[in-house]
Length: 490
Ligand code: SIN
Image (tube, rainbow, N blue to C red):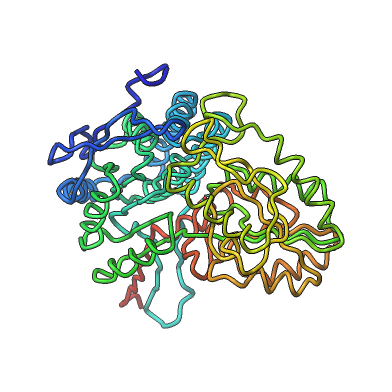
């Protein structure tokens, strides 16, 4: 066995369709690699459109029964699922660290974070209220009822193998939708383990169906869902180009979409900020998952009065981060997900250096640790000419841009097609309100770097997508509003 687990049977390498664990229709498999050494450690089902179709068939059969269950009956299953996720926390964390590379301490945190969405939606599901509209005409009564939208296709990324799929599936199930899901090709195992626990929690057959696939095969599988009129909603977290592709291709059947896409988040430090708090906030938000997070600050703007001191103190903190394989308990930064990711980081740093940036710490691959490691890096004298300014690096690199006036920082922060998260640090209460309202982002951290919570609405504006996950708003994307007009009542 490739890793020590209390319950080795949590490692599933087949699809879950209609309550049965099955091989891909064509019998194909693809290798899943450990990013710490680049070596394949397991083969997973390589699904194609036939498997996607079988999953949709199962979800369609299960839908009438599931939507007819009482919200509290669905909530009871979600609560059991939540308890099972926590009971298997250590195994799930080990599976996650092995396939994704994040340090164990973070994987354990992600299991709790993902489980919190399941608990939250178990609680919110029974509170989906409609409206009785105040009477407008004699003899008529107007009612707005919220109904499950139908079959939901959930397509999830590799950077949060448990939390992203949990926060899509849980609200869908809570309101009575059935689900077909495909986790990212790099990290299918955590999601499949989660599906097994949902089964153990008593979820009826066909309500949740999950298939795994390699990058190429996955495109064909998802194409089947995009074209299938029975799938009424796509929920996706990932890159903006893929989000646009899903929007275009699902237009033929006019599906509802929620898209949580690229970020390029700004992080602004004003002269009047509490510098210790700003550094702590930046460390927490930037280096979570080694910088491979959509809400990670990508561009750090520091006002000129504190620029040099901030850069020096930040570099001291960053140079002390321990890098290594995720399964070592003392490590804070693991490997990047794959070779493509490290190549992109190296390209961004090289480009910044060629345009005048200087390295305060890091700035190199750590090949002595393995193929996919990159040193946590601080760059000073960053400018708008650099790729780090307009593309998400998705790695442990902090470029520091200098600014003079508040309006310059806001203009630069908003000068991007993206708008997922934005952060700023200041002690001025009036500035907190002013800057919060001017930043073009769906999530704002004002003197705070850790913004994620199951109780808060998460999602972007502009080309970072639409739809909200978490909170009471997170149910709306899985519901449609039906208007019932009762006549002849006089
Ligand atoms: C993401 O990177 O897309 C999700 C981050 C989070 O939930 O905090």
